[in-house]
Length: 434
Image (cartoon, rainbow, N blue to C red; front, side, top):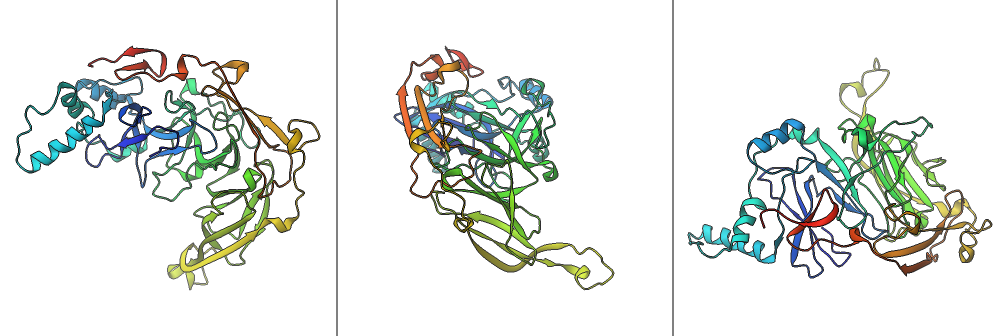
């Protein structure tokens, strides 16, 4: 699923045929040996696993967390489970996967595979590739939660909900009370926009979701959320379900209502603090997507979708005051150029952090190192546009980055094969059964 940081994230559908979740493993730097990173990861049209592309080591995933009744049932069947109810699995390596595939081939050809597997490979067959009784679809849908890691899968955590709503009201949603922020990724069959980030928009992440005990199926309860610190903290920036795109290195965000007829797009120059609207069609439309050039550095966007049409008998009956609009057969495509709005160009990139500069200095960190702000063994500082500076960067803008090594602590190291941490914390302990 990802090979961008000299290690491989691998997804295995190892829960039985038709089960909509599996396990995510991470390799060592050789790409040969793998250990479990996160279990019960949801798979829809694609795996619910997304990288925050502007920062190293940061990934977001949706995980099926079994209900208490499901956990008790698994324990009754003798399956070992962790504190989240996920079945405890073992590390494996390339030879285990080759042996498993070879055994399948030999079985298909009627060959005898006895004696060709060592003890660990037999354990892999039983524990990693073992089947699992089917889980009802409603059981999965009712128990999906979103997790985030800031250290390349070493530790996964629930996402803290915003402290206040868009209107400034306290959310009273705390992880310790079983409440957190949950985000759509890919399991909604493409109907909802997934978590989104771009390499050039440092620290910015957009996502559609809700706060509560789980990811809800009720779209009316979902909103657009944004993080500007790589997913550590979030805030709601727009009610409802939207499609979105990022431009001008993160200075410009363009959105449109999703799955609802509209005439407009909305855009912001201050990361969602204020919004302006732009009418792009006199006829109601359903916006399918908003796209930009691959680097997300320009101010030109393409918006496409279909025109809305009244369907059925309502379309011709004058007694209907409100006609239901649905997606029609006629498509539309609109080109938007926000450079014609004449926003001022940002100034002061060379003295970022000064009061008269439009740029700030920002160092990503997840709070584990206090004031030192060490992150994956580095103290990395970016110069990026201030949120309140309503100006454009320009396509030639290059973010200034300063990198200094810093002292690592125990959590910066991964456990060796055969060892793991309890709940992702503490020292590496020998794994049972190895």
